[in-house]
Image 1 (tube, rainbow, N blue to C red):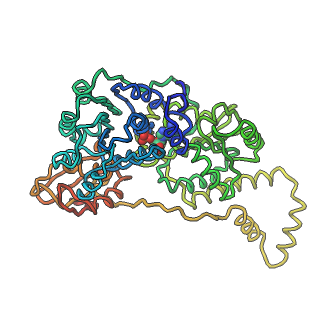
Image 2 (spheres, rainbow, N blue to C red; image 1 turned 60 degrees about the horizontal axis):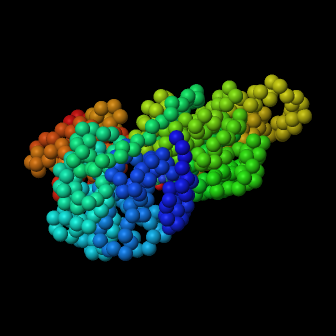
Image 3 (spheres, rainbow, N blue to C red; image 1 turned 180 degrees about the vertical axis):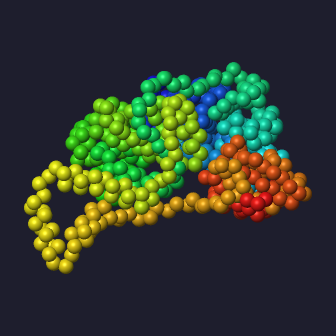
Length: 528
Ligand code: AMP
């Protein structure tokens, strides 16, 4: 696929400046393909997952086509969850940073309606909302959409799964016919295709087709991490495996600079490489990396193209790549010239779906590993160190050192104590504890990998499975299809959720409502 610079997309200076500010180096494939059509005024069907850069793919052209002087709602983005609505609104707002007077407002269920009514009075031009809440405001007359010219259905398949299809149809019937309709969806089930037939005009179907690439034979693992624990986990993995050279990938220039500073602050010999650097600077960094003076190189995909260094023993996907092909290119930088190599990938929250796509595309086995604890680091480091000790005892002449140890041992110490002290100095644990927020759940009677939760509402409150899925998915942002079996009794309900999300679901839902009722939610007792 051809990689496009944003400069080639005929964008305004304000938008280019905002893109530069965010540190994006080049357009992702879905952006490169969608932006020109949307700018032309075409309807599009974009087949893309979260994590591919699809928000900017529609956000940038919407901002370019907006009439800044006109204080009416001109663009409306419908999203399945409140989490996504907030995220999308934030991304569009950042892209609009240098466009004057552009107001973007997220509206979603769960937030007090009065506050939203007040915010709507400020005349935002772009609304990002969940369908239910958008309908609610339309019915109250607090949101007028008769001047809307651009509509986006974001994650249409998710909205379908969550039962929003009727609301979407109602909204689309009210928006003026003279409009541009953009639909983004990871999958294209029949009801979505029907929606596109009914409500789009001659839509252009945009999807990213990938080349077949040969995937290198590299040991590939991934870690489920939080954004704020990435640095600690990276440091531990480097300490643990002590790779001769490591290559760490970030998605933006800004992230490269930040991470280099953080790693240097922790005492690593790290440096960075990205597209903004002059050739002489790059050459300098590369020659330090080749010689080992820098042993952790942090880079963007663009900058790392063409890096061909034999001793890279580990590749880290600090940010998950936006495009599947990039994953294969990245991990191919290690295990060169017949040497062994490892690829470590960090996955945050919903990025797990993106990883599944990568896995399918690369036909690779990427196995989940638990982030190393400080004890793990110490154990592996000790073993690696002891291997080295054995090698030295076997191969080197140690007579000069033996006499020093003998002298010390002659005083009050045994040679075992001296060896132990030296080992402690060499590999002793200096790390801080990483904060894991994982909660251990006892047996809740759920299927493997799931946790069964008890909720104190049921049939008596007219609860249906859709209310539970909609409530949990809508508030927590976990996709509806991940929610497992639901058993509704008169006074209570059991629902199974994936183990890795269970803690978050309990924490978020405790302060929330389902069908307008405050709930109590806790891990179930296996006996039930
Ligand atoms: P999305 O698929 O819209 O959820 O985007 C996923 C992430 O990619 C977000 O954090 C965006 O800020 C980021 N992103 C979007 N476009 C680019 C780009 N061209 N280069 C680097 N990062 C990007």
